[in-house]
Figure 1 (tube, rainbow, N blue to C red):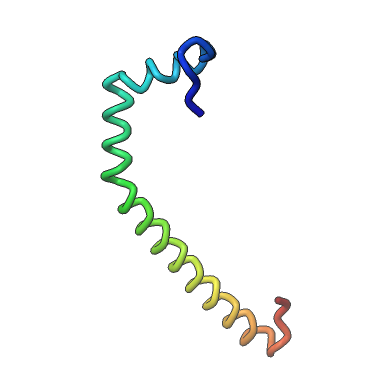
Figure 2 (figure 1 turned 90 degrees about the vertical axis):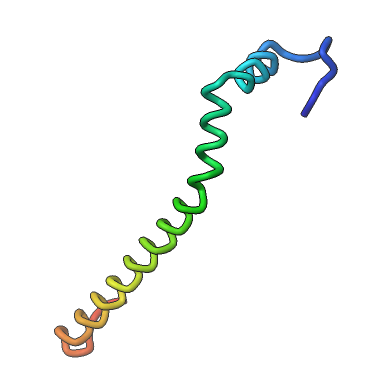
Length: 70
């Protein structure tokens, strides 16, 4: 929430000052560029874990003679 300058806290002023730094700008750009890759990696990794979990459940069901706990 933006306040008029006379009512801004010191922390709000510090945040605004930090947004003008080179590091903040570089981080914002890099995050925007790499976010799609991070999201796709997360989706693929989750899918792979889900597949192996399913294989594990099927094998447990087979090797216990159909009495595997769920």
